[in-house]
Image (cartoon, rainbow, N blue to C red; front, side, top):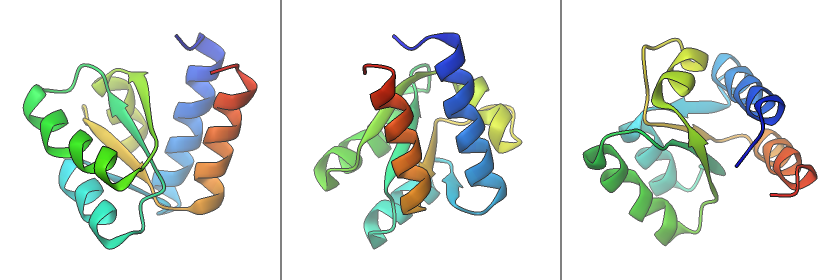
Length: 108
């Protein structure tokens, strides 16, 4: 389980990605990025509907795209300017590397 500081850092990085157009928001856009090969990492809400998770998680798994779990849909939505979202996909290589680095330094 991630601590509060790591959670804030990861959400902050995801928010930067959304604002800088280095991330896509929502199941359909994340699926599209996974299909066209541009998706590097996905932040998946643990409390997203089964329907939403079933549409995106198997594809991410099949494509070998790393997933970070442990967020609430409202947390992901807040950084994306929405009420809630099931998934945020990172399409920028450096941003994805930064998020994986933050996770690695936390002993994940």
